Length: 212
Image 1: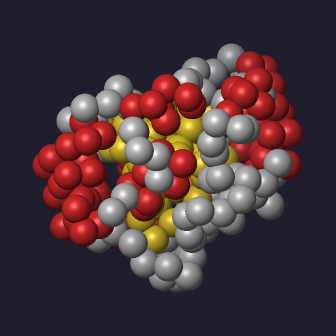
Image 2: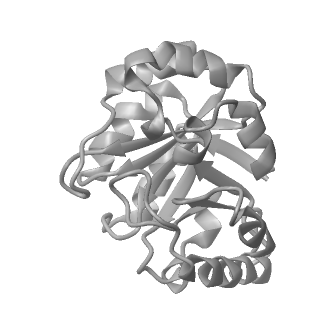
Image 3: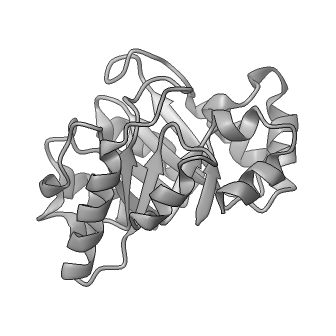
């Protein structure tokens, strides 16, 4: 299981120290939620903050765009060279164009599905993405409870990936902890985002170990 701590749950007053502590763990990526106050009712990280995170982080970034005007934000973050840059299928009208824009800049493109969005919407674009992020909470705020119907969606998505013979990661984000991680793994999820569970623990590495 790949683990990406969500910086949305970090203590922003000691951001550098939080990043340095995560650098000492064996987490795989740092997950960055970019919210614009329009697609979701919250505003989070701008480019300068993410640039600072990238400066101090020894981990690659996994950026999740919860925004309107997707192309504008893709172009804003391209030069930070994240490992993954994921966009919402619910927002973008020209998905193929945006996915190619991301890949042409040597970044792995991802697609995000909100809890109510069916995996069937990916049928004709799955081959163009390297990661599908399944939201297991409604996007916008951290600390929400896990939506269990996302497990069934993960199972069906895994079947689609196998049927098309693709190398596509399934990532899940929202309400993930040591109590539900086994179920999540059994449904074929490759990577989890965890915020509150990791950052509220006394030892980040122990929390990451429990998710692995």
